[in-house]
Amino acid sequence: MITPAHITAIRPYIPGKPIDELERELGIEHSVKLASNENPLGPSPKALDAVSEALSSINRYPDGEGYHLKNAIAAKWKVRPEEILLGNGSNELIEIVIRTYLMPGDETVMATPSFVVYDSTVRAAGGISCNVPLKDGRHDLSAMAERITEKTRLVFIANPNNPTGTTVSHAEVSLLFESLPDNCLLVMDEAYFEYVTDPDFPDSISFLRQGHDLLILRTFSKAYGLAGLRIGYAIGPRQVIKTMNRIRQPFNTNAPAQAAACAALKDNEHLNRVLEINEKGKSYLEAELNRLGQFFLPTQANFIYINLPDGFSSETLYNSLLRKGVIVRPAGPDVIRVTIGLPEENRRFINAFEDILGVFQ
Ligand SMILES: Cc1ncc(COP(=O)(O)O)c(C=O)c1O
Image 1: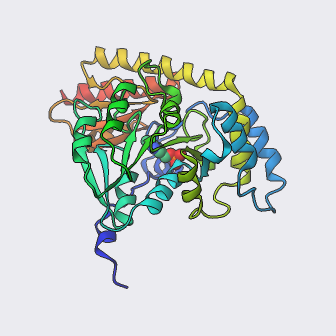
Image 2: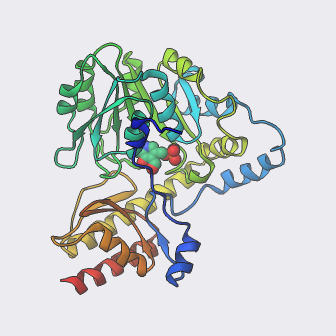
C-alpha cells in the first residue's frame, strides 16, 4: 500500500506505557502518574453507581441521541439540547468538527505549543495547520487574527491551554470575533474550564447568544474524573451541531459513560472537593517550585508547565523521575508538564525533583 504523503507527515501520538508494565521493567512499586492531566481523586461515587446500574443493559445499544445527558447538560448551562453534540471524549468532537468543515488545502489557525491533536487531525484531513507561537506562554490572539486568510475555516483555542495552563480573557476573545470572517468557526476547547478561577475567563456561552460562529468543547475526562469512559460534549449554533451530527457514528457514546456523566453533573459536592484538592495542590507546588528557584507558568488548570534550568533536558529529567517512580510529561526539549496530584503525590514529585536538581547542580 502507498501511504499518502500527508499521512506520513503526521507524528503519531506516543502513549505512555501502562503503569504496571513500567513498574515491572524498572523494578519499582507505587509509582505516581502525573502525566496525563487526569483527576487524581477519581469520579463521583454516584457516577460509579450509575455505571454499575448501566452495566446490566450493555447487551443493548446505547441511546444514540444521548437524550438524558443532553437534557442534563442543557439544563445546567441554559442552552437547548439541539445546541449540544456528544462525543467519545472531546477528542472525537475535535475530529468531527475538522472532518465536517475542512476540505483538503483549507487552513486551520492554532497556537503552538497547544493540544497536539488539533494539528494531527487537521493534517489527516488534508488540511493545513497554521501554527502561531504563544507569546509569554499565552495565546497571541492578535497574531492569530493576522494569520487568518480567506482559506481559514477553523481557529482553535485551548482555554486553558494544554500544555501551559494559561488562559485568554473575555475581552481578548471579544476582539478576536471582530476580525473573524464569515465562514470561519472559532473552536474554544474548554477541557479544563471547571478548574479556572480567573474572573476574566470568557463566558463563552454568552458569545454564542450574541450569534457568533463558535463551538465550545468540554469534557467529563478532567474535573469529573471519567477519562476512561470517553465522554465529552460540544455546545454550538444549532445549524453547526446539526451539520456535525451528520457524520458522527450512530452510537458514538456508550451507555455507561452517558449514565456516569448524568450522575457526575449532579454531584456538585464531589466536583467541589476535586477543585479544592487541585487548588491546594497548586499552591503547594507553586510555593515549592519558588523555593527551588524554578520557573513555571501560573496555571488555571490541573497541571503546571515547568521550564527546566539551563543544561537540563526534559528527556533526561523524565527518565530520572521515572526511576524514582514519578511519571511526568516532557513538553518540549527543556520543559515538563506535571499534573497536580493528591498531596502525597505532589510531595513525591517535589522530593524527587529536588533530589535530581541537587545531583546535577
Ligand atoms: C486541551 C484538551 N482538549 C481535549 C482533550 C481531550 O480530552 P478527552 O478526549 O478525554 O475529552 C484534552 C486531553 O488531554 C486536552 O488537554
